[in-house]
Length: 421
Image (tube, rainbow, N blue to C red):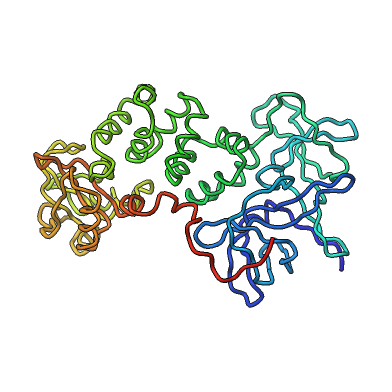
């Protein structure tokens, strides 16, 4: 058998299949162990299976690795992956690491790692794709790239020198928010914080919104108040309020004081309500329009790419003012209903009379019953004066009703396919 080489950054995200061609999941990382005199040996893959659970697939269960797909024997251990002592993840820990060339030409950053299958069928780390420091002061300049073998570099780092996370951040750029959150939580704590430091505020906010509140608080506290406030500004107000509600009052007020005034005001409004109520579950940024607005105007607002799909399902017609808390709520117009009318039709003429708003003090169970009874994905929330204060979407209710550890999936029964590590 000839030597086969695959670069891990290209392998990440590739599908994993059983011998019959059924998809089992997708590759998230490669696990290696160091050896004294030889390159690190590949012992397995971290594979994400349905339910966003990361599992370990022993390299012995892998029959073929290519840049487009991985074929296994079909027998995998579906217990959640936990990194053991001595194990190193290539994407999470090696990519982005600074190494020093043994020829004395200086340092370089690992941008990719090639794993190679030798004639005995074993997989080891082969070539490294490295980038040297840039030689020009120009902000557009990049360092030269070189290939090197594992034996030609050493990993010794200067005291206090931080390990670069830039390349790892780049590899996460295409991940959906939920996948990014899951991937970050699987990193060692120190590495997680390095990556979060490099990520833009908006990407960190998206990921935090998909994490358990305990993890959200831990990450924000580790980042410091200034950065935490910037990230809270980028979060949806209801998610930011959920996080801040977990903090002591003094710390909460300190962060609110550092946030943008408008964002902080939205969050303060939500913090007035109990977490078990419609007010505590809602977002206070639904689409609000006057009765004389047209279908065309409403559809233009719905088309905004940053709008949450559930919020785009309906617009709410009120008296002025048109920002929550609004004037009196006149009614709801659903997206599907708008499609049945000409663009110039006024919203006030096509209000759905069958949808009743719910009070902000309603319980979470009452909100769930309303959504289920009328097959809704969002429902308007009003105060005692019938002013619109927000809307609760079905994802907010599901997040509330599911067990606290639903994201980890550890409470699920084990599927029947199992192997050993």
